[in-house]
Image 1: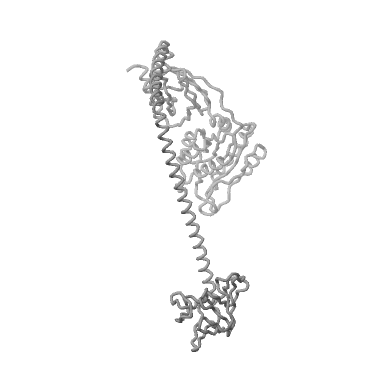
Image 2: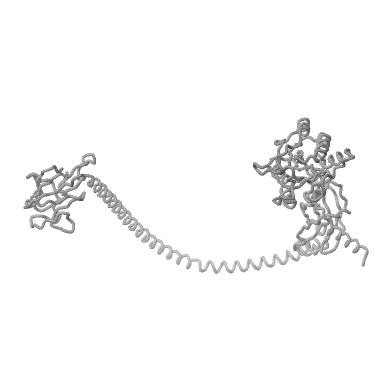
Length: 526
């Protein structure tokens, strides 16, 4: 096996067994100078990189590359949320003291113009709202003296019962709440979370885990940094969370506080670079064919992840640039095709001109027929519309008439005693409907009188209805009119108007009025 192949296999093994996540994001791939390919990418590791830190594989072969660093992306500052573990457990006092000491020393030295610091403590779940974080600085301060006072005032929380005596804090939930907190801040600063903890994570709460924290932090583009005080066993893999969210992890050096301070300074100073990344550009000679197809390559980072990218190789234009005589051939073929197309179009044009007049005449006849049919259709539609409107008016009138009859019938029912008509034999006929017709037509008259001197529908007695009168003149009254009978209608020997008379007005009835219809005499009682 060749020496180069052995090196390449070792390199792939290093990539495979590595557990640390290295964020490399491809920004742009430029194949315009094919076969030379230019790839711009962002590396969030703050350490300066060389070409030997990367390898490029195309079609299964490792390809030599050239690397240069571009201008780094700019940031207005950094937003750092400090999550200070503050356990009630008495043995935690030394950890609390150490973290306060380190922060008091590091914060002033790590502060740059535009930076903001947020502070929260966490212990056990709050029984009231289920949250963990106690926010001490919510708006983000640039006042270092005030921030140092907040840190100095952090004291051990009071015991809250047996549940507070468990050697654990809600570590995962605190980080999740911290991610949500920073995500809600509208800022152009680079965000980051710094966790100070002895890793007292609650083993009884499986609602949160490191996988959820890592996913949330990556989505929000928030790296997590951590300083671990070696008070508990390393059982919750702080280092994994930091590595896979592109942050940094360090253990507190209790005996050498200056080293811990220096490590924390380096972490905070790397926030901007890790958050925004360092821009690089690599160039390499591609070995794929210029066939216009999509091709894929893979960028490998020594000891870290790999990332893939794709590009489209050039097609015909590449060959034309490489072989100029192809231009003449293409131009000749194009000219011949254009002339052939011209001849075909000319021939087709002559045929079209010949048949155009016939088509125009036929279309004119069709147009006229369509216009006639459309006119007839519009006329039929207009007639149909008029019929529907007339029917609607009739239906509206009938509806109003029915409503009026119903209303008057209900009004009639409230009388303690219904009015009546009495004939010469003293037979009484109750007027129990608002419109009481009298005549020979048994089907349409409430009072049927079989007498030749009486017309089919001779007269009508109505309650609260009197043609020719205003509504205010009708309330509680009964009226009578003649429906155009042959022999007329008389009230108290006075002939009343017929409905066919001009200026017709109904006659009001009073108790004891004598009504005569032909030879029939009736007395109105009310």
